[in-house]
Length: 127
Image 1 (spheres, rainbow, N blue to C red):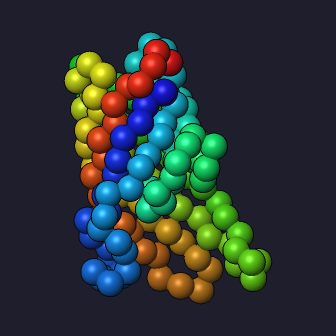
Image 2: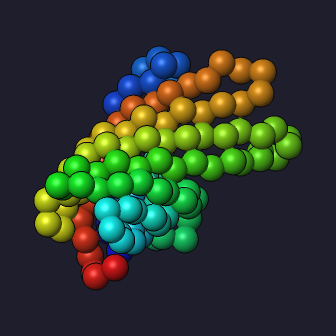
């Protein structure tokens, strides 16, 4: 299990479209032969445990360089569908992962919005 924080730092919808405060993040990673799979809590949310707002991720790690993609499809109370795709790039140094992400939201009939931010995770127990 990995635990840490993320912070949104910009948005294509402008500075008033996001909150730049630090938010809690949880992640489960499995690594095999340089390939990563797992789950991560959604960026833009301040969550309290790994069971909230999960996205599946898949990616790679080579020579400490780590990259993954994750995505989620949601439906709101008015039955409007929204999809997001997130790309994370960073480095793992022992029990710490740091890097940046871009998360793009698409909703039918609206222009896509991309949020950018930073992430820091620390290993809390062996995966």
